[in-house]
Image 1 (cartoon, rainbow, N blue to C red):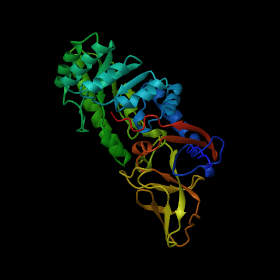
Image 2: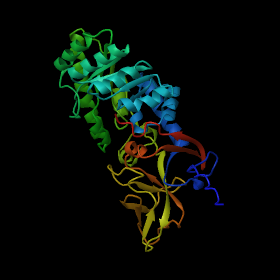
Image 3: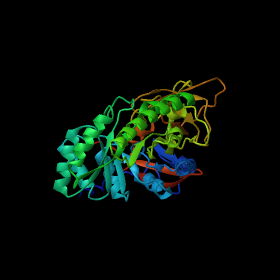
Image 4: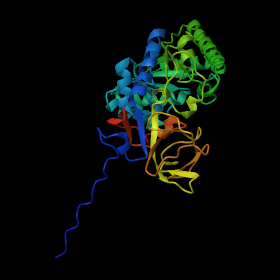
Length: 385
């Protein structure tokens, strides 16, 4: 008789609630909860004090558990950038979603119309064909969607040029009162989020809000009320809250920050903390000068630069992440007296860009005071339709 083949084992989890962080199998995406919660509270308090609605961007993290905590603190709902991305959030209980992007074509319109049967859904448009597709899809599904016309205030990506173009689209929206409703304007200028000096960002944000305000005034003169003017982001939110133009803001990266935002010069109370890290393990000491980690391009995004190197105790290490391969990251010591991690020792990396880094992971390991407190699915990972 031959021995029975044993059942193939399930892959064990990388982390378990209650384990010390040092026991987490790497690479693993970590959220340090104390700093994360301070970031949430700081942003919500600033929005409340300004009398501006907070609608955080979920594209930054793709994790419904995070959005639920933001809504519990007072956020009105969330933004998503893609329609499919919103589905896990609505399934988790988020009831107010803005798709801050322009879907094109009947297939995406059908996705949106079905989603609108389960939540309050608003979508941005900048062309009459998008309006026609959404109206037809909502008529078929028996749903209704609120539309915001996006204006181009300098991003030079999506959006119409001026108030006459907005009014032409509003006329198209108003032709479908059972299916569609004009809600307001989106005015987003993403590039200025990353101007490094505080004064540069302040001046650029002021120019953007001035252009947005001029369009809103022109609409008002034409008898059109904008219920919502939405935009802004983590890099300019202190100015967006104070400019008197935006009724809601859309910051996303502030929850954990990343290396790129960390380069910005911030002032005042809206200085957010690094709370997002990639735990990585030293897997080879190379020649003694070169240190090799187990985290490379498949674990973190490097489009905004290579990560910073920290220790699990929250201190910046005198090590530089110099290059990323598919599965490996190379560290170099800055000086002869730099303490080098030992083989098998963890280091924490601050990702260059948080949004695509989240999209590389299935799970977020939430940690507090050195122990795993929760495991949160990154449920919208890969949902880019």
